[in-house]
Length: 93
Image (cartoon, rainbow, N blue to C red; front, top):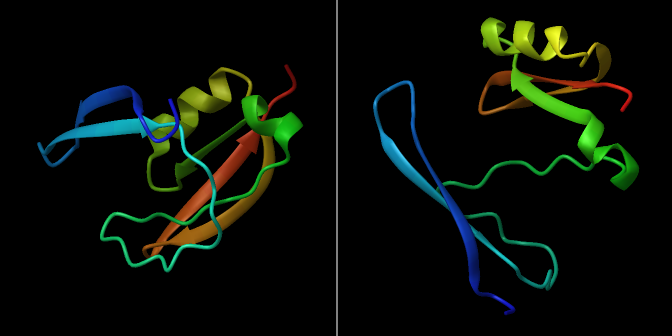
């Protein structure tokens, strides 16, 4: 099963681009050279906090309002990725 596709998700971006995200089970063999065109920064969250943490670009005010409505009210941290501010919130489950 290692390095085999286990699932996929299709979606359309706000710009109308049709995308497919494939998920694999893989082994971490060390640090990447990070030269992929579609590479995103990895944010390390404590394992016991993963289900309680959500992130969104600050400009996505509707998403942030939905997350707050569903209890993600504890500000955890923020990062800048691709010149966009990303905010991370948590909730107690």
